Amino acid sequence: MTDEVVSEPRDDALNALDTDTPLVSPRSTRRPRRAGTARRGLLAWLVVVPFFAYAAFFMAVPVVALIIKTFQTPDGSVTLSQVRALFHGQYRLAFVSSIEVSVTSAVIGTLFGLFVAYAAVHGRGPRWIQPVLSTFCGVASNFAGIPLAFAFIATLGPTGVLTLLLNHSGFHIYDHGFTLFSLLGLSLVYVYFQLPLMILVIAPALEGLRKEWREAAENLGATQSQYWWHVGLPVLLPSLAGALVLLFGNAFSAYATPYALASGGITLVPTLIGSLMSGNVVVPNPHLGDSLAFGMIVIVGITVLLYSLLQRRAAKWLR
Amino acid sequence: MAPIETAIATTTAGEELVRHPQRKKAGKGHMSFWTWFWLIMAALYFLVPLYSTAQFSLQTSLHGYGFTWYIDTFKDPMFRSSFFFSLRLAAETVIIGLALMVPTVYWVHLKLPQLRPVMDIISILPFVVPPVALVVGLSGAFQVMPWLLASSHLLALLYVILALPFTYRSLDAGMSAIKVRTLTEAAQSCGAPAWKTLLFVILPNIRTSMLSGAFLTLAIVMGEYTISSLLLFQSFAVYIYYIGNTKAQQAAALAIVSFGLTWGAMMVLFLISRRRGGGMGQGAAVSR
Image (cartoon, rainbow over all chains, first blue to last red; front, side, top):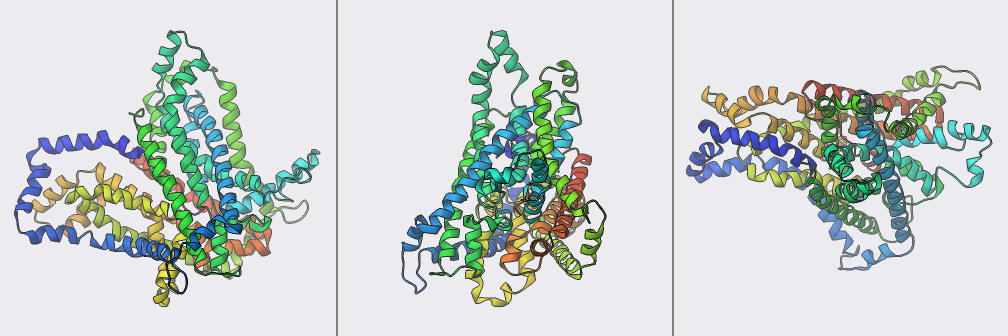
């Protein structure tokens, strides 16, 4: 992850300092203890036990329980039918809609965010742009869930301020098939927390684009598009792909925002799980909620894995 | 994952200006059209929904404006009870989270550095398990302990997990920035026992990163909807949702209040990180 890359030099410097001063050397503190009784070593591990127990109890136990239920029928026999059910009917539809919304909002967020971040980093705007933008991104990426949904209903809902304004100017968006409660509408709302995340994630990569590379390319007679095609884009590509994947996962696990906007009848995986849990839907099999959640974990897990792999690649240019 | 990049982005974004102050003057007007175009687009996209919500919440009649909806909201006893319920949970989460994480991170830095990669992985696991999936697994696994599922303290215990990536990252950064080992040995050679070292030597040195983690946790808990609604608790976000189904304009007022809260928490965070010279920045929440 990026922070390791950035903090590495500092850590190295510290370590170097530490080893130079004998008193502070990691060896000097560890060796006598290690050489001491085995009980002391065991004692050192005892301190971290509460944390691991806590993480196990509140993360591992629920996840393991969920996995067991995914592969077990309510009467206790082992089955794959509950996993297979995810690929059929309304469950399949929920996954397809979830993926569609996540992809749409991730693509819009990535492109929009890239341009905005580039404008802020390399745009030679006034000085205050960057701190203001990064503060605002911190706020906006945290302003999500129920309040965000209501903010957009007040803006682009059937009687929203912007909708009425557009109606006044003769552009009736709701007559043209737009609704906030559609896939596109939902994606538009998601962009509100996708865009700031993208800006914050891609800014370091954009700063890694050295002015010298551009100057070198220009000195060799490269045009603007040649520079981007042969230098800029290849350097940015892993970061861009990583950001896209991160934004996808970010949207995929969103629950509150689509829940508050669910009246349009789009069913996403998280909201489907929610209604299964709260008993709003007649459930043929109580374990289906678990297998849906299992499907989510698999998809988000792949996303996180991909992201960290891409991030490692991207880090090469960020030094 | 998000908090990490976010932290870096904020830090580097802030520092970049300091490192190349002369660059800003160099190519004035070069790319200005597209620069302005995208920055204005972003500003519009961020601000128009806020403006609309604010206008909607202030409108009392066709052409009249006032604070009626806000006053009505603040008078509602359910507003107060849900708000203070979430605030209490936030306080519990911060206290439990710090009590659990500070000694652990300290000890890992001091005695068990080989555990750091493991800690890094565990700290991103809450992102892999979406909150809704966590609740599903939990309500199945904890069925044997119905008293736990019915206790509001369970929410705080789960929010500790939700906030774990943020708390861990900020504490880890804080501990990396100070010389944990030197400080500890200095304290020990003065005769301080381990707990005194932690309390009186280490804690004062990492208080900014503890504060960063605390305010980020506050922002997360005050907006958290998924877990509290599925476990049937009347949290602040659940209350906002409930109002939204009955009184749209009060809901708009609440959305503005909620934005103000987030903004306040982030401003404090921003000021803390500025004073420290940019250690931790803002993070992205998990309360989507």
